[in-house]
Structures are given as C-alpha cells and as structure tokens.
Length: 251
DNA sequence: ATGTCACAGTCCCTGTGA
Image (tube, rainbow, N blue to C red; front, side):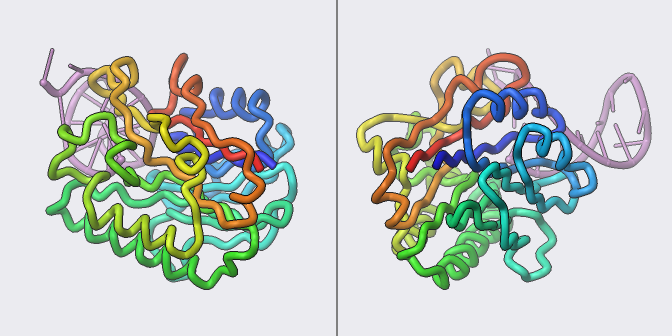
C-alpha cells in the first residue's frame, strides 16, 4: 500500500497539480491539508472520476482536511468530536488501515496565544490517539508545523526563538511517538537531510532553505512492513506549486 | 528588502494568515 500526505495550500488553486499528482504517483491513499474551502466546494465528483473516494472536513476559507482513497473509505470521523471551530483533523479506515489527516496550528510566535493553542491541540491529538490499539495498522499524517529535531531544519541558528523548533513543540511530538508511533521518513532515512516545506518568500526552495514538518507517524505493523518513505521534491517545482511537497510511505 | 501566495470582501486593491 502507498500512502502520501500533502499540504496543498488550497484545493481550488492547486487542482491542476492535484490532478497530475493522482494520475502519475500511483498512491492508494492521499491525506490532504489546507484545502481552504467549505465542504460544498470540495471536488468530490472530479476526484471520483480519477478513481478516488473522498471525505472532507472544511468549515471556512481557512484550514480544511481531507482523505482520498482508491482502496475503500469507511468509518469517517470528523474533527475531535468537540464541536471545534477549525477544521484540522479527519480520520477514516482504508483497506484495514486507520488513517488520520492532521493540520496542526502554526503557532505564529512563541509569545502569541496561537502558540498555546498549538500545544493544546497537539496534546488533544495525543490523548485521542492513546485510545488506539498500537498493534493495529495506523498512519497519522499531516502538516505538524514542528521539526522533530534540528536535523530537520536547514539552519537552526536562523530559528532561535521561533516556532517549529521549540522544545515544548518537539516534546509534544515525542509524546505522540511514545504511544508506539514512528516518524517513518526519518526511521527509514536516518542520515538524509530532507525537507517538505520551503517558504514562498526569499527564494527559499532555490536556496535549499527548508524544514521537514510534514510527517507520517506509523504504528508497529506498518513500520514492520515498510519498504520506503520519501519526499517528492518535484511537486515543489513548476507551475503554481504548493509550498509543501508530498511525503510518502510504502508498506 | 516581508523578496510569495491565497483567501474574502472592502472587489482589480486591502487586510489577514501562512
């Protein structure tokens, strides 16, 4: 099975790239973040024509998460079930694998209330995942807006005092890992610098100024059979790219 | 050099978010 996660930064603006991706990358399941639309605008029919069933959670022009699958899509769960105001998580079962598509709050800056919101959100995610039997196949993917370690940041000295690298954020990721989940991209590529996001500004992609913040946390049965995990840098090139590249796991 | 992109509404520019 091949699963990918991709922050598309607007399903509407990215549609030509999404269509190209689905017809050429041969993924069974795609976890999407930042669709930036309400459910009524989501292209369910166009995706079905490409062979993918889909489930979407979108409340406004911000955030928005989806799961696309060509191997079945059942038991869809929208949000945390807390009547939250932002559409940041959706889960479903695809071919016996429970999958989550998550869009973790950005945090903005360490002294911003949005940063506390980010930490609370990660804590809630951890609590929800704690009820899942770790002996079953589970893939929790998405834009975590956190680099697991300094190795996932092109220049840690440029991020001193910033979000995405702070110790409380990284501790929140470790708390998720302690449930028995593995950052599969790093697990299978322990020594390879690889990034999944480059700011549109400052020519960051051209300069190699990236962060690895798009992650796939996998439970033991997935890790045991995983053969590869990689980041598709080609998707960051060309006409109207997202600022994020898709991240894959094959198992 | 905050050097880009996307959204909605104030609607061909502006404020907001990333």
